[in-house]
Image (tube, rainbow, N blue to C red):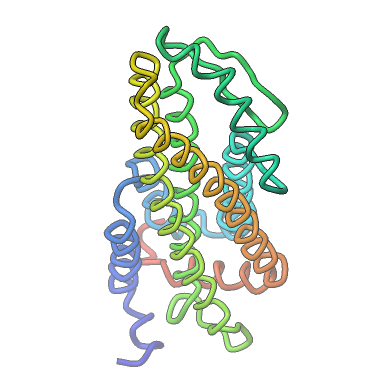
Length: 271
């Protein structure tokens, strides 16, 4: 069946869009929630075609600029909690300051969180601070899922457009998938290292003679700090790629999304 004939079958279009989103959910299951699913369902089905003109005016903002801004905001919140270092001396200085400020508080279930501009006393458990960081990582992944779904929707047959560089788009989709996978991997590693480190530090407070444990904790800290610094750079670099893509192709993206919305119509009687 040709694309034109396939697109003329409105029910098939609806099912194809549904399957496309379900595919995104299957490949990125954990952060997807009912709110996002409901938002997309409302966007494509309940408001088409009666409000398609209104949505045509809004779609670029909703699914391009706003999505990228959401990603940017998540990155800012993540990186504000990640120390950055220019050299090994800064890493060592930060680590020493971290130990001096943090370790005495562990036994009392309170801590000091060191941000790049210095130590900040916080009257909560260290784990709660990390959970806050992990929440921002989850929001970042959620934004990537929506971005990936939108990019997929721009491909043929929904967003077929001769002047659009499909190879570039496919590359961007792959890039988003890679960012998501790397983010998930870092999130898992971050949670594992931080939790084990907190437990080890408590043990060291009780039994400071455990040199093997102390060495492990110090090594874990060094790895974690270096990983987080690299992670922050990776997030910013990849966001820049997405932003450049959106700016360069803003008009084409708008036209593609408008065409996708028109293709999503599934019967004149549903106005």
